Amino acid sequence: MSDPVERLPFYLKRFPFFVISYIVAPLASLLLLIHWKSLRPQTRDVRLIVSSLFLLLFLVDFFPRGWYQNAMLAFAITVGLFITFIGLEGKQSKHDK
Image (cartoon, rainbow, N blue to C red; front, side, top):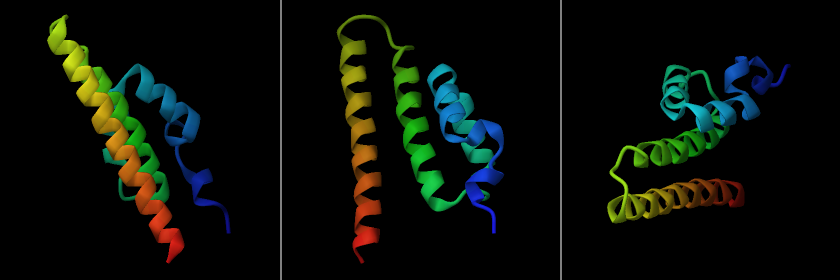
């Protein structure tokens, strides 16, 4: 059988998805939602972590400059790291069982 990763569209492979997330975060989230059911759970989790982190950083840019933007940036980074920690912790506990 062929590897399911090879059947992904070009824009959902690891590096192109990272670049799309970095440049246009809402588009990456939309692509992820469109192809949600066709992705394997492991691939889906990694893409979700990347797209949500870049989406949070993208949304922070819309806040006014100054103290509020710095506070929201710190909040976005904290939430991104929390999501990453939860995602990685879940993967480790599944492998331990």
